[in-house]
Image 1 (spheres, rainbow, N blue to C red):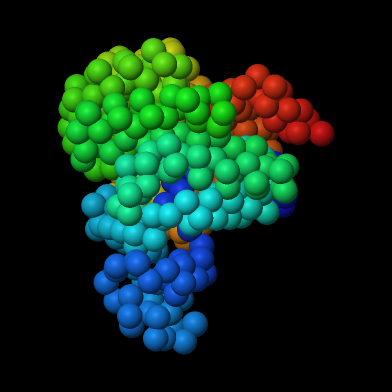
Image 2: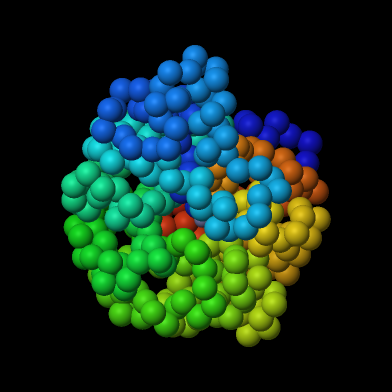
Length: 342
Ligand SMILES: [Zn+2]
């Protein structure tokens, strides 16, 4: 595709807040907040800036040849440790939208798991409203639009998921649009969250589920059939389960794909073996996303570039799929489609 990729209007549907903090910001917070308890923190505080940034980078950015999803998930520890106050949550949410706006992302769905941010006593509602406040400030300043997806951790209980869903319900229509299940993927996890996701749907949340990333396409099938997911996070292994593949196709389920992340977590062995283009040519509604901007040291322009799309028309198709499967309201969707035409 012969275009200036950074200048293209973009949509991002799958981006974790805690995996997308600026390294500079992490250092700034480590230096100013003495309640943070992390490995090597004193060493980092005593280093000069360049050294300190390198050290932080070694903790939060994973190499392309990382060993597994579990190692990948380790790099969230430091960001999560610093994201324990309202001020920091507001700031990092603002900065994520600011970074996205600067590469012409017009609409972004940010996700994070509120229960990871209660270590210093914040309540779930404060955790949600702080992030929404940061997003709103960036919307006003940059004209980008954003919505929030509340993540429930698969290494926590169904009761924990229900807590997030209950506490988050008052924010539906005020920036919160959906729930997600994330974290390490076990075979057959869906059956453990039937009540939580049924409650979420009844309250008006959309449902997107991480599935078919570290485990099988059967999880994709279960996420749709048992949990009511209308979108799937990654879904790279959908093709390994014929029933899941056919269902994703016939129901127009959208797969939120994140090429670099999928290589790093070993969901695919290489970019050449990534099923994105195959799915796209089969009429499956795929979108391109970063997953984690800092952990993978990428932005959305990078992900679009490495896919080496054959034409601008192909890019338009992906953009339209992203708009249609977004959890935005109808006004936002028509605004986003209008941007593409202009
Ligand atoms: Zn993800």
